[in-house]
Image (cartoon, rainbow, N blue to C red):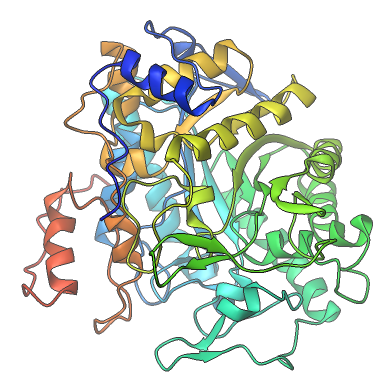
Length: 486
């Protein structure tokens, strides 16, 4: 069994472990900066606390929000965070990551409009106003991880070994598998622009062009070995995002706030060591030919030269907010989301979670230092449990980040922001404990819809019952859901 990492009884215990590990994590006892307002474009939000885009894998099969989707968003709206970063929503059916991901098309617009109105109403009813709340939507194409078939932008020597045409039968990607064409990418640019126009009409305050977690737009950024106008040079690898942002700006101006969740560091693929269960990096050659934000002479380390160049380009094209992330949920999950226990398809982390958190904070701090006037949203907080707000407070005071946000932490504790602001602390009984059951639910496909809904098993009875069903232990009754005001 892996060791239990989180056993801290106080902030001083946590500080001592940080010192032992030599990581630069600091914590403030008194919360203040988290409650300060933040200017984003032409808007001002009421605090510096956010919720990351978190999919529930609970849409209808035609991509509309369903009951659990409405429930999750309503809880986020009532939770007190002033930045709600709506979940990944595909711009085209072939770009869906799973059969129950949200899909933005003309038919689904009334349902998505209802979703944003419900969220806003829940916030207003709990806090008396919503003019200081920003709600956005993340637009995506899942690329290599599209559930119908992989749509890859180039052949990645390590990632290809972990990419399946048919995972159930163990069929991996062949060496001659075709990459998407330049014509395909040109058409996709226009689909993203049309999707942004739809987001604007639905009443969202901002839109995120997703470039993280090794999905298609993120993969393009590392496409050094791709031929044609979207691969090779930095200029070519950033052509897609520059074209999309330029078209949006020319057609919509500043009528919607532009944002991007960006992998500042992809890392390299890992796999489980079958003897120890610990994650190990796949063998690699140098100079490394793949991935974004990596040191090509040692891709186990970051090199932020290109990510910082890209952020500067995006700012010049109107982007007002960048959400920094890293890693891939498919092949190096310890980098993106430090955890206590691995998901079903994962491995024991090869480093202490505090070292992964330090990587998040260090890289985000470097970006913030490079662009002091940019709204930078930070990631990597959930494993810290009740102490995440103390770390976030310190990072804001140290000017390492503008807004502190959680993903898993908010799924477990939707009103964590309210408690941080009103109580000055979080309740230990409510926090995420990073045991990866939410991911296990995302990986569960064995029902008639091809996908189980995902949520927090330890903190939400609905999902505890769903987990039992995935394990064949219980036939689930319909979920007891809240009523939604129209």
